[in-house]
Length: 304
Image 1 (cartoon, one colour):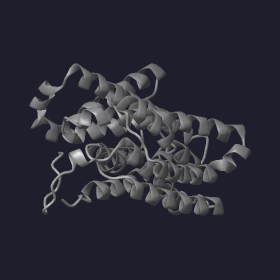
Image 2 (cartoon, helix red, strand yellow):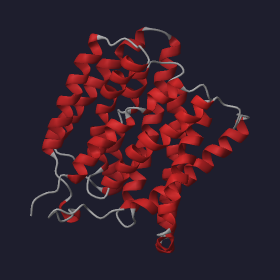
Image 3 (cartoon, one colour):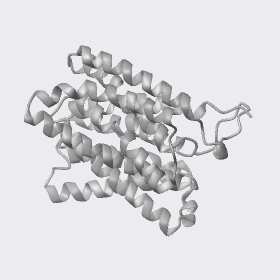
Image 4 (cartoon, one colour):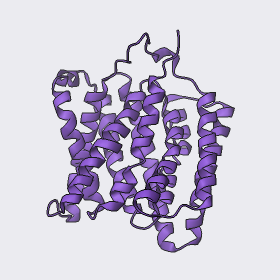
């Protein structure tokens, strides 16, 4: 049986979609918590009509499924808070790069939680991609303490998004994308709402442009980005997704150059090439989980 390419294609589209996230955050004038809240709130709102037709599936959720979904929503919420905050102190390139160093956390997490092992070739390929990421951001460690603070926030956000994917990997094996993402985005939006209430952030009185950025964050990097990552979790491991996301800085740097007029340094060009090489080598060393490969004779995998 031929191995389907659909999950890989979806993964590529997802990575390209999430590359736009940092740009919309930088363009918005709202607080980091508010941006994150409306991003997840609008995402859950857009998914709700599709969820309603499958609402009975929720009855099949075990206590463990609810616990893992709640944990995923909580980690996703604070991932966004820390990452968006990091963009106030450091460059788009450096923040995105450090957030995408998640393979380090992913390899450790999948080993202890799911006993998944990565081949030696896979580890070397991932280290190559990570090396490219570190090379891109190295300049910030010499710029200022403020940039370093932003980098630390981004690194913490990296650990949280890895935890979000790890918990999601468990639930997505047994439940549809629509139901899982609605629950996780809903829990995440509720968490962010409480955070904003306690921090005293204003929920309204934002210019029309900000509302546009909130909506675009929900549609492009969330529904076309994170939702696709959650979809492919049924066929690809968290490790595969984590390494693929390392290409996000390349897309973010390109968009920052065109939209924000941020300069592109030679270190970013070289680092981007190294990252791309590492990702290709890692994907070549891994394969789709054979026990979950969907049939392909002109049909799309059924996961929605």
